[in-house]
Length: 409
Ligand SMILES: O=C(O)CC[C@@H]1NC(=O)NC1=O
Ligand SMILES: [Fe+3]
Image 1 (cartoon, helix red, strand yellow):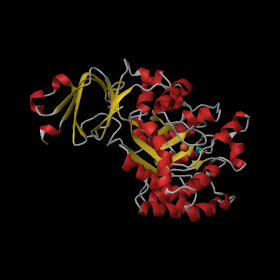
Image 2: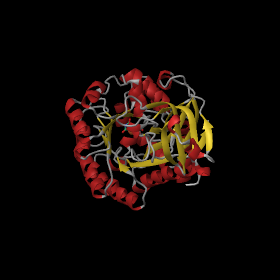
Image 3: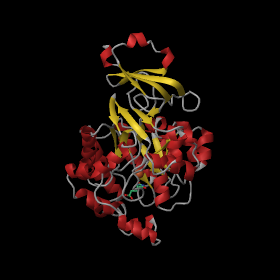
Image 4: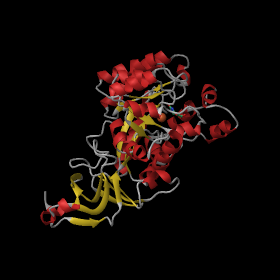
């Protein structure tokens, strides 16, 4: 390593989010040193052998706060069209389920998505991705789920992979063909799973398009038994799983996910004690999605106190999708997680960094500020980190770093 490759960020207040450290693992008067995209040192500046770093580029943070780069671990940002019309229907009293059963909902986004090419899907996703990245996000998970055919689902994941080539971001993809049953398979979930979901997943794996397998376990979507068929194949392929579970009812989806050692179970408004215990036992992360809770006028809140007491890791995410959460701000998601779900400031910050990395199986790579990990950092113009959660509709990002690449705001 040549010193000229070193970047030394000094005079900062570093929230390392290191597991095991008290609170946010804060280092006052701290420094972060990185080279070739990897963190080589984080700690008190006074412990830095500055003499040994001569030749490196020194950057004075002027006392600013530094967190790990933010992570949005649950999005559907690749999709065509929008569902503003359904938004108006919900304002007039229609429920999400009524709209779905009447042929709207996910199925209506399918038509708009399948009408677009990979390149058009990339172009329509970019404004949403750029808005997320403007808040210091360095990793985004993107699901399929609006193609509902083998080619349509593969096309969505190709678009997701293409986004990583045109922006400074790590993209993780999830196969969500088990999101809804397309009209041509109405009433034939089993056939859809056998003829589209599973063969498509094998194609996605063969083309290195998929990192994890997801599903929508709900009365208007797929039963635990149907999800299990998909998860069995994910296990054969060596792919981790995650699940939209207990969003509108309790089918035992979280318990099923935990039985497969799922990375995460997401939504969880209707999660019960049995599901909490199963997740705690399996180490499955609870991903809380306040945007969907808010947008569909849900009233039942996820059992945060029970999750906290059981030691279930909690992440938060935008769930950015055209139907239930057209939300493109992880900072607003933090505020909603605190105000609507009762998370603490520390839980909101951990939930959009360390725990979000855990929900993606990426904790060895990012999500905390530690030597050896990717140099993914967010630098903030705030007096205290509580301001990241307290404000809403305000973005105090000063600049951020992705794999050692420094990006001005
Ligand atoms: O309505 C949509 O377009 C997706 C909704 C989204 N998907 C899911 O499984 N739950 C949700 O809230
Ligand atoms: Fe979702």
